[in-house]
Length: 602
Image (cartoon, rainbow, N blue to C red; front, side):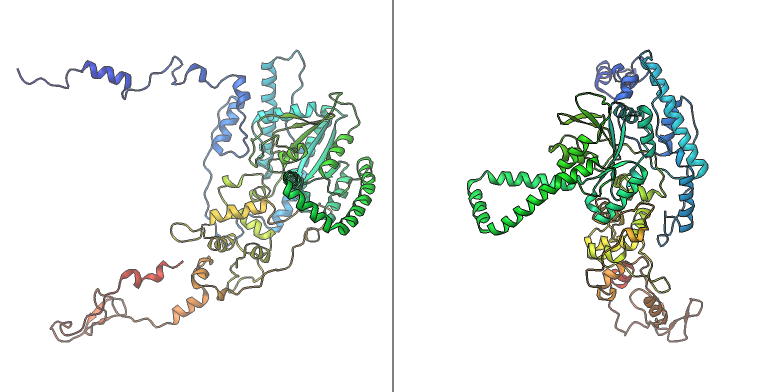
């Protein structure tokens, strides 16, 4: 008998080990999946827990979500890819296109709606209500998609998760006053007129109100323009700044903490005695202000006109307490529903009114998952709604990034947004803010044109040291910093009401820093901040410079018997047949990285 083949008969021990610990495929359960039956994502309860905000979707995700709601199948095709020139207004519209889009927005304004909750009563079952809500929500999404496709209109990436709209419906149903919190720099973009109509549809006695947050970024004259505009619209408006209130509360807490130490208290008393004369004058002014303040607050609350005054925390609470006089949803207190986009300061406003942090703050949609009720006082209850991106007309996607609707950390293309920022913020303001010098237009271009996105980002990235692995300024990283400065108000640009000319509404300060000539900068920085690395002077100099027209051979270049013909070929002259390099000193070899170092410049 021959030698026994070890591989012919399986080893029982090895088979048991592989079956228990080895590389065999995982055994599946009865439903032909590897999930446990308790981990299956089905049922209405699981749908209610699926509370992730969905605003911007890819084509594939949008089709899958729509198919899930409608129970049908769809087909999609890939988008065409185009290459753009960074020296053009990439992603922006011309003046004619902007005017045409504004006309379309005004024409189809009545089609800009939010989803309504279907009618239901106590006899409606949970399954029937869920089916009706899904059908109504799908029809609403279909109408908006058809409007975008037929009229070629761009909208904000509105919330596409039905669970968030269910939270809004509950907040509206139980609130006496629905407060829309808007950003003072562009209130009309964040205001939803259809939400005001829906509030009146739910119950005619309910009241709408607009709270203009971040009003400290506006001047008194700018707030007056908006107060007059909302007076004409017939809606009550209050101007507030959660940031200022939080800073005041922080200073008061710090002062109270310092008062607890006896040494600091004695020093403070000594300082107060030294400045006693000034304190008397200040006390007299405070007394006059206290006499005038109640009259102003009563006039603000009881008057028919909106006041441009920036309200403090106590004034804002008194305003919410006395603004509503109709029948209440709960007799013990008035319920104030707080609704707004992400990043308009809704959570910060609530925290400043409560004096303690009650809700988490985030600029990303979906941070607040469910509505929650908070007692501001014994007779005031706040009802906080999750941040919702409602459908609104916009000109470009870059406009949504600058207004904080889309998260900057998730943007895929920074060029249009930075181009729009450069059109809104003048060149000298950007240079004064960051202490940089943006490259001037080259010969043949308009010297008064706004800088391109790449010109700003190259100068900013080189100045901050944001460089890529190949030694170029990191434009993507620089764009995130610049755009966040715009969203946070460090680069300020405020949109005015339609009745006011924008150039007169918002003006910029004059240049503060001394202008620097580009020729004074180091040559490496001059090349790094240029889109086209070759200037006109360099091209002229390169053309007129006399270059030696001889062949480059390793070790030596000046062979007396070899010359370069017009067609580029080597021609040997009649000469001695002996080796010409025998009695000639060889040239010193030069490293190639030094010889061609000009190719590695920025």
